[in-house]
Length: 312
Image (cartoon, one colour):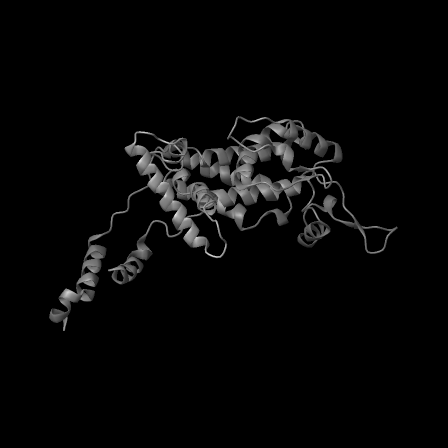
């Protein structure tokens, strides 16, 4: 039956509203990581400034040859890069942040004092950084136009990742995403823009078609994979260890329910929603046409074993 369904899916593939789902978690993580590296000056290299000269953009930021050292270049201070004092203030604000238990990791341990940069953060840390931390910690830093553009980008991600959404707001969200990307192009160099920043436009379309992102992003899967990895006791047979640990957890749960004793770990893991997220709203339904239905029925009849004598 599976061999019969796979070609049938390909038969209706061209008429689907959407073929591939974009992962909001990794898109947000990559954009936030790239943004922080530009703010700290890590990715603001000489090649980035030379690229501006090749494109004939922002002449005041072009790298100039150092007259004292051969082969060296001097980079003018860019408005999107934190100064030394601003970077110290930014890191001090991150180190002073305190979150409720389980809400986010401590950003203090991610501030590398030797290299003066952020590092070692998880995807959820970048999620909290983009949507809640950057608008607060960048207050009073950077030029106002650059700072407001970053705050607007944070607001766009919060609207995309909302648990409850209104289809009436989608046209406004599309305009805000386009305006935010245009403002980023005005203040940041072309090296900042890659496929991830472009995918931000398509996230709004997926929000309209598929519904809230909490039902389809990778956070629940990543947490479940971490649970399976914790079951590994021998690296020689990791799959067997995961299967054995899963069976033990299920057995423990059923025995505990039979004895009317429920472990705390089951209260945290098993809920009626998806990965602990509260979902509201739904995606669009697809209705196939009469011609598509007849084509699917004809395909099944022609490829079923029970109909083979009549076909021959």
